[in-house]
Image (cartoon, rainbow, N blue to C red):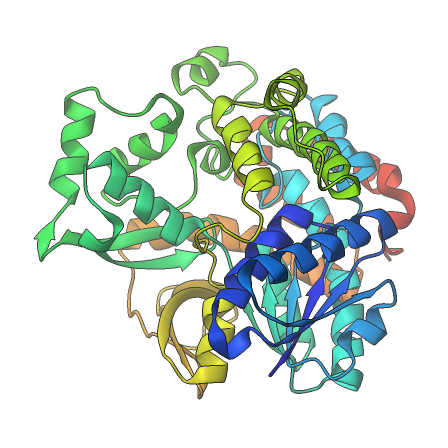
Length: 462
């Protein structure tokens, strides 16, 4: 059976979900699972839970835990990237706090905007080091990248290395499930075709048993039944005619229209959660502390009220509290997640085909987007590997909007691969949200401040 390497296994909750998915498949249940992280506490936690999952499922994988990345990668058939360079503190906090000094507010800051640019510049050099290790230690490995900023990172890997890879996200299948629920349908009752770039792909077709579902979605607008936390996406749907994959809080910062320091009324009317990623990180940290205590004393029951109070103090929603409780109480017994990672590995190993949405080089797949861009399209997976679907031409308004984001992605990748500082300025000046808020001299100063604040988290630029 294959050797599967988890790069960033200290992302314990995500690693748990993927491992449970993998071990549910008979063809993968005896795999070698090589866990790698640079944080020994988190690595140990994931290792211990991995044993619990295996026991619960009645399967017998070989679990390895490595602080040494090269040992983890040695002979790997698959590698799964799930790490964050710089972590919450100091990197993410810096990405939010420095722009605030210039009046630039963000929601998530992991995909685009100055936050996404800096995250990409931190991440790409580290990932390329990993890929150099792969080229030496496991040259035939297949890399499944879950690391954001997805399009930038995957683009850089494809351009600078020969490692076979795909970028993965849950926004396509997650939003499809969400839309089905909104319309009172089961997931299996809808069919769709989606394409674009990561976090900005659109459903070109959305149907149920051959009937177009878009009229029913438009009815939600006319009947004023749009969900309170999804006003941005429904506004874009109304104006462009197609529904986008990524959430409203994400999408609000990919455009120049919704977050404006001199228009607080927009923030209120579209219900945009500023600093949302900061809140989520605080919740995740609180959840990790509860999880670590459970791992140290697995027989000790978790006090639901104490856990809820701790997570609430960190800003958790009721949904997040319920999820944490479910995770702690059902290790190894959860239903498979909607992530594509395990499906891909199973399809390649067993030959049982599946269709996933992957981020791959645009080699003639979408004709009105740049050929060098990283695009998100349906892909058939079987023993022949990953086979992307040719989409053709996107509606022109969608391609035009995507191009504004591709500009930033391309320049960030260029800066990372050439280490030319000028391209960091260029990426920021062409970012839709940043350019709508700041003058050019402010953008230059902001970039300088961010580079200085990141210090050794970034390479030296020319």
